[in-house]
Length: 211
Image 1 (spheres, one colour):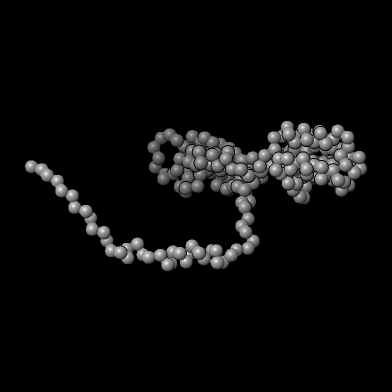
Image 2: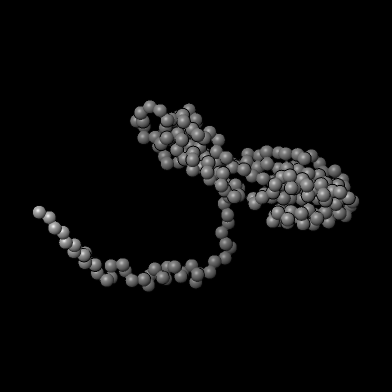
């Protein structure tokens, strides 16, 4: 099995400008931002020219199980010969609710004849430099946010996001839209009676005694 790490994207350029030595940050953008990295896990399985060779299906199944596949993982099959092994691997990936993705990413090393390459691509988000206490002491006269500002929010976001790649690319919207559906909320708002149409309610009178 081979493993290759890629750093995808720092979500903001602010961290490149504001170093960890404690410069003033007069914006409401936090210095420490989530960084998304991608790791590719590679497994080469032998074929008999048509299907996976004897015992290889079990090896692939065991390897996938060892990776503890989950939502957000992507599985690719690089099969230059175009064998039916792809369908066998797709069936195994389906046990985890994952469909094969295309096209397969470029990986190091040539694929030997008579083999197929299974690639599991996994992304992870983390926030380097947090907690950041570089600007947490002394009196503040520069209208700067704390150096630790945003660390809790961004770290929680990085830990909880189901698909870290969404922090980079987001999710595409629907290709089509129904104008009638979109108009319902607007039409309801326009037809609603104004909140002040019934006049102001008279405040209730309460009595009290005292000396």
